[in-house]
Image (cartoon, rainbow, N blue to C red; front, top):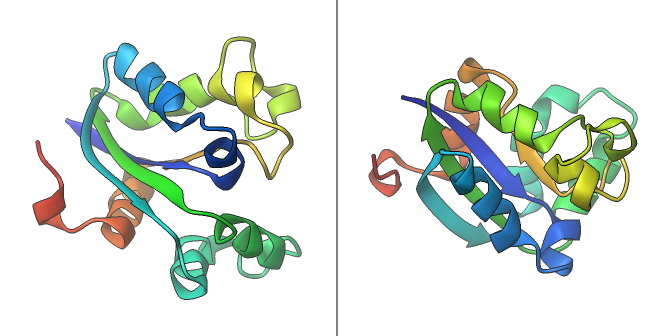
Amino acid sequence: MEKSLVLIKPDAMERRLATEILSRLESAGLKMVALRMLHMDRALAEQHYAIHRDKPFFGDLVDYIISTPIVAAVFAGDNAVVRIRELMGATDPAKAAEGTIRKDFGLDIQRNSTHASDSPENAVKEIGIFFTSKEIFD
C-alpha cells in the first residue's frame, strides 16, 4: 500500500478545519496510519521545503508554516499520492476543481489549507521528516 504525507496548514488550523479535512480523506477510502500535532521550528520547515530554497517565496513559506501548530498525518491506500492530490485539488484554490479540499477551504496559493506529497519517492522522504517507523501503524 502506498503512503503519503498530509499536512494541515496554519490557515486551516486557525479555522478549526483539521478534522473535516482528515475526515474527507478517510471517507474517500484512505487509511490514516499516523497522526501528530506539532509546532514546526524553522529548521524543520526549511528541511521540509528545501526543494524551494532558491525560490523567492521560500522565506514567506517557512514563516507561514511555523506561524501556528499544524497537523501531520500519513495516509495509506492504493495510489494514495495521486488520490490525495486529486482530493485536495490544485495548489491555487482559485484553480482547484469544485468540491476539492483546497477549493472549499483554501484562501490563496500560500494559504491553501493542506500539503500532500507529490510523488511516492517524495512521500517516503517527507514521511521520514515527520515520523519514525515506530509511529506508523499499518
